[in-house]
Image (cartoon, rainbow, N blue to C red):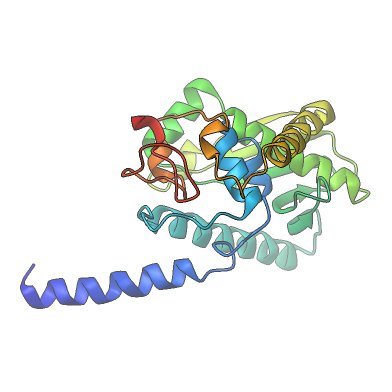
Length: 244
């Protein structure tokens, strides 16, 4: 690219970052359903305490692509139902597994009493999902969605995930479903309450003793909103992640 081209690239990159930063999803303050199953207590504690994310933000493009496909799929489902005069699928319903945690479900199939969540992973992550099944975080997420629907008065028999690679073909679609497990959902919520109770005892965030919170460093730390590669230990400014 020429210097002119690079200037255009810089302008467009700034526009994309600005849009993502100001998106409603990015401004969400309350703990979301998709976050409850994260294995790192510290990440959940940061979100519950309202600690501002570090400025070292990862590239937002994969998230933008995923969000855009979600919107396309919602329109596709509803258009199909309008054309064929059916109303089996309910899209983008807000649910509340508990007063502390809320979220939106992608699909609820009324006849099957089935809750589904879209995932649009990279080819490598789709392959891993096929080989190992959905991560525990994903499994907790859909069980919580199921509980949210039950709380709203809908019957739920199964929950699941539909994964379509961001690159690839429809024939590679991976569908995973399992029985609704209320106990699993409630156990995940209890963990959140326990983390909150522990934080109060340690007077967090006022004491700034984030180094006392249990954490689970992994290869995904770089994608955490509170990842700070310059930090020596977890503080209100961020966490060093898997490096320390």
